[in-house]
Length: 504
Image 1 (cartoon, helix red, strand yellow):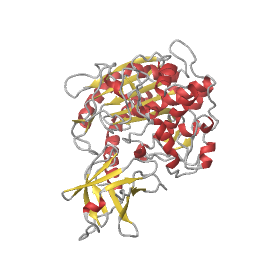
Image 2: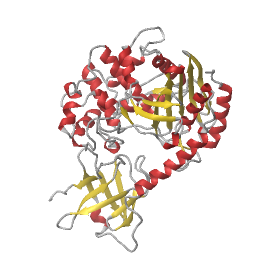
Image 3: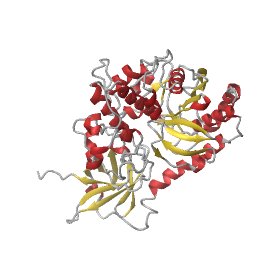
């Protein structure tokens, strides 16, 4: 095993940033307990300001490992048992399946084996509070048996946040700060997404010129939940309801400390064992298989999920890794215990697999392994993934059938439609144009065929072309709106029922 060749690595990154149309990135590399690099490559504003080791970024779902470690810290302190059902701790906790309600433990939720699918648009942009989202779980379909199948869902970590609040009596954000971030000495790591702008040295978020494409650069807004409330009064401040799944803001220097804490088995830089060693090992223990990605084979195989981390066999070595994504940012945190090596990378570009290529290139450099051609492979995979997403959601309507028309005047489709656990769809008609209003998105609709309409713009990460199909009741009146808001197997389309107007 050799030392990381930083000159070679950073020169290659600079070259690839131009190819991928990515402004810049934050990078930390640790080896043998030392931070060998904590800095940046490229620009944090796409104009003149460089990325540095102090540049704040939003790390997205890399936060899940922080949440899992906080849970383990609370177990270390005797505040919870990770093998007891969460229903014993969270008052009124209820899922749509009674067996799942009574038996699921925090390990089941942290490892995404709860049987709960993503239901992403039951929370994303909804404006529901954390407590409201926990209550709404009773209305959301469980599409797999308990502990049967890996299904990534941010709701699993929302539940973890609710558990933290139940056993500590603190806001999740306060518990994360006081019990994990401060003891680790992370002075530039924060728990509210808007704190990315709290220091002058912060990265701006970007996307490519058009959604689901690989070229061009345009500025996008930071993600902010409608339920967030900014206040100078810490007690009044409200964070992202799903913050336990992805709220952490940090920089390369602090993330190097975080990786070294994990490589040290839960010991802080000054030698304090913050989390019991057996619980740290539990965090890195495979709980359920996730399946191998053909694009990553043969180097990366035997994929599974632990608690807030993915576990991967990388060229015969154990790789512990997790990615993260928020609008305008893409991140990865990884480490290899037997090599005593860790990497953090976060680019200010939306859904861009350059981060995967970078940490694989660094590992290969240390191993002296053959060139994995990771940049070319990940670029091709990224492009194919985008096309697959667009084609998938368009497929529900198929090719539009010619010479069809709606069964009703367009004004008849206007109204409010509701589904338990979800926010409402509001359809409006003006001068012959239908528009959908769902969560914070308001795409226009175009007629597809018969009673189906397609979105002309995106809803969150759902691309334009999403099909909305209206239904009628026995009297011939428009009564339902049906839409597919997820891609998991056995997950039914969501049926929104039209709210009847007052008789008056």
